[in-house]
Length: 261
Image (cartoon, rainbow, N blue to C red):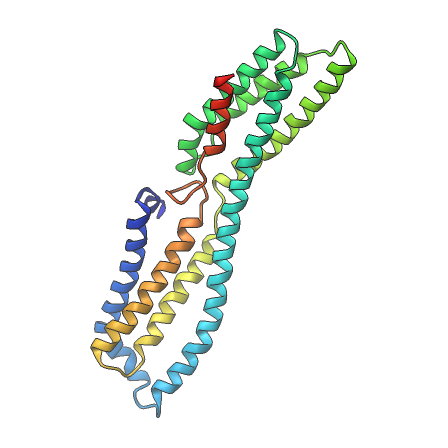
């Protein structure tokens, strides 16, 4: 339900997250802090007690933030690697079929160019909306059918055909990895825990006995940085959405080479 944030420019997305957390903290400091303070104001050295508890909580929450951030980055890196590997396998396959005798070589190369163009022009916009493109499978099936129709007549053609089939299987494997990554992301339960933890963190800061202006300043800085961390994780989550996403540069470079030949 929050996927609309990926349509925003990255700078606006970051400001939105930091501003929302800061605003939430300020509202809580003005309206909820007096209520929560009733539970600890009679405790001797309440600021020290709250500080000890907050320090312990921040250790666990910091570990969770780091774990989720690394997971989001790893998902994005794996998706980019799958795209690069798919383009590399496609390039090698294109070079292999270029040596097929006519008319097989020309037909197979045309099918690969058509597939590459489809990925750039049609599949990528769908992926940016979180939709797994399906028409590419039709083009891959058409290429596979034509590839299997080829019957080697010499020993060199047998070796070339075997290599093309191996590259085709490698291409299929990396293509599936790319499609699987379109809807990959951090599980919703981890997002719930992250947001609840951020709320608890800010609520515990409300318990400190400080002047209101100090609460607004120090707590606002803490809340804005929490929002920035959440923004960082969200921007890397869903690898194909938003400006901080995997781009089709590898396919575009390959397509230019195909057209120039």
